[in-house]
Length: 320
Image 1 (cartoon, rainbow, N blue to C red):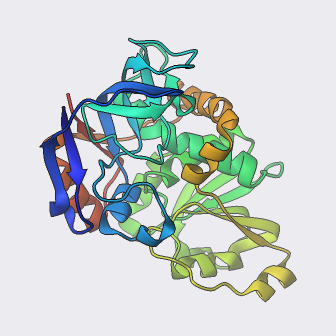
Image 2 (tube, rainbow, N blue to C red):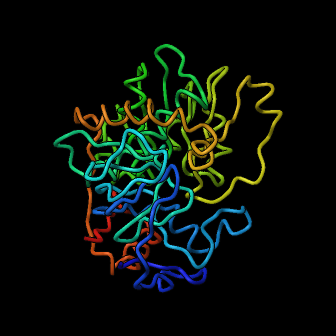
């Protein structure tokens, strides 16, 4: 089968299109004929070696890709509820393998797609929308009529939070952007309003969703209301190495981290209800993202685009 392989950490040029043996599913696994594989910032960070010290299973040589849509090719022993021929999407798969014609995925993180649902939209939105559901129900609980702020509003993960937060009872969802030129784009994603971060001084939010990190994370603490919580769900802008815990103490505020790739393997039973909520939001049109598709051989081009920044929507590889 055709697959993209990383044999060493480095620039996008380390993404090589190769021929590999077709894998077979083991117990509690499914083999998926991949039609669409999402390209995420996490793929870029792993490829560069940014997480090499964190013990992730994706180490060279490996095939990137943690989110796919396709058709079940075969099921392993003890798999129930899925069968060959089912149209499916996967959540974040810790072991990767999606940039290929065939991927092996845990059955617990693989879900049938509703009839008529565009697989490109499914792979673009399902994993991130499921992450948003879990972040806003497990990492924190939204208070009634919550005001929610999402940093980096036009990013792939950030863009699904307005629909999910509203379904969970939020009264207002505000997004931040890096330039005024992107305000209209963010508001088109469903945010009640979008603004430059510095224009929010003096406003207070019950929940701040932070997929950005870096110095912005510390500054965002100052926007939390009493008993407010900041959820760290990513680090596109780098790591926040220190936080003023006295600020948390005297402000009656808190910070919680949520990494869905580490969470779901430990709590697999929570995947199905969260995915069902996410699929409902995608199916009714509450979440609809721009997608660009590329053949598998252009994986390096998509990573170059991701590193350059400014990508709107999702970049998708089509192995078949």
